[in-house]
Every structure is written in structure tokens, then in C-alpha cells.
Image (tube, rainbow, N blue to C red):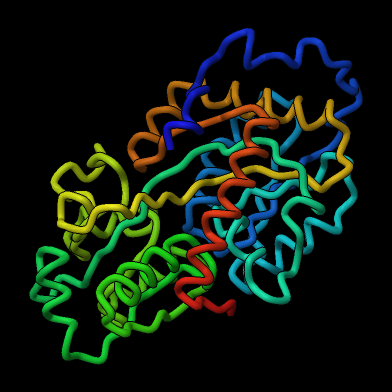
Length: 321
């Protein structure tokens, strides 16, 4: 995580190397569409709508957010891959982008079909339960779940929260909890609020308001340190389960063959948007850490993530939707 935070809002000449690029004056000459390959309410959707208005001001054109959910993000991602590489169709997605390519019959190639703009922000995953569950710690939940036929809510097959749950519940604790996959974090969190199922694993954003309202109970977060939004919730390591540092990140991508100058101009606009006091305040309140690494460094990070999550997919036997 530290490696992708070196440029954390570093609004410096280094980050603005774009000054040397001959940027196309005509771009953007019309609205820019951000496709979210998940249902509303999840991290990519939240971040896109949070920075969208500021991006519109910077670019001088509307930024339109469009949700296109399905197949753990695969349907929307494949559609963007086939879009014209003219800078008018971008994709705001989650770390599932780096996971899905490890499944058989993946619907896209992360390296062949896309060029990375930046990882905009990241946050840990959280394990949480319905408040009627008589467990206030991970250990208590594991004891409760041991002799019961339970399942856990996931925001979609191949998402990092899904694999965090698989790794914790089934590889580490051998509880045999199957995942119930939803078309995004919003519907998944709502399902646990309704008690169907009674436990969930997902990024902090969607369950956070329910946790604060007492309608869900957080047991642990997958970050290195406790997060400011949930200071009373221990990390996995503090709860007695070290070695699981998992994050859900939100990244911005364009179709491959998009001109470098457009990629850089969009990156510069994202970096500037993160300087807005209002954006920074809202991101902090939603437990997001802003990242905004340059495109080249982001491409290196995504490549490492593909390798990391590929190992987890093989270890857990996770399957696509």
C-alpha cells in the first residue's frame, strides 16, 4: 500500500511532467463517459460521482457516470475495451480488474486492452455481521459459524472483498462458507442489513453508513492500521489473524491505443480534482485514501496486483459468476 501512496496528493512539478507533452487542444470537445462495471453504491461508483463534478470543471466538459454491471465487472469492462480509443469512454473500476483476468475465459486482457490512467483511491475490506449475530469479534464469529450452515455476501465474484472472505473463512478457518455474489457492494450490504445472509465481506464504503447507524456490526478491517472512519474496529492482525493486508482500490483506465497526451491530460485533471478541499473531506469521511500515482507507475502496480491476486484465485479455487 505504501508503494502506491508515494505520490499521495503530491501536487508538484514531478507529478505534472505532462507540461512537456503536446496535449491535443481539441480534447475534450464533448462529454466524457465514465463506465462503472458495477451497480451503484460500490467504491468505483462512489469515487466517480465524488470527483466527477470537479473533473467536469477542470476539463470544461460534463463527466457522465454510467453503471453497467454484470459478471463481476466483466461485462462493462469488456464493453469499454471495445470502445474507440479517443478519450471519450473511460472506465472507473475496482481491483476486481486485476482479479478477473486470472479466471478461465476472462472477458478481457488487462494489459492488451487497456492503458492505466491512475489508481485514484483505495480502502481496506471489512468483515461485518447483522447485529442479531451474537459475535463482537472475529474469533466469536468463527466459533458461532463453526456448526452452522452460513454463507457470506460478496459484491461480486472476483472482487478483492470476495477473495478476502474466501481466504479468511475457507482457507484459513476452513468454515466452508460459500459466497453469495451480488451485482455490486450496495446490494450486498443491503442484503446483510436484511439478514440474508448474516455476514459480509466488502470494501468499507457500502456498509459504512449501516455500521455507523448500528444496523451492521464491523468485526475487523484488512488494513495495516485502524482506519479513522471506524477507529474502534481492530485490524485482522489485532484480531489475531495477521498476514492479510487486502485493499480494494479504485482505478481509472482507457482503451488501449488512446493517445498518450489524452491519458496524461486526464491524469492531470484527476490529480487536480483531488486537491479540492471538499473532495478531500468527503474521501476521508468515506475511509478512502487518495493515491493518484502517475500512469507509468500505476501500470507497474496493476501488473503486481494481477500476479498477487492470481495466486489467491488459484489457492481459493474462486470461480467467476
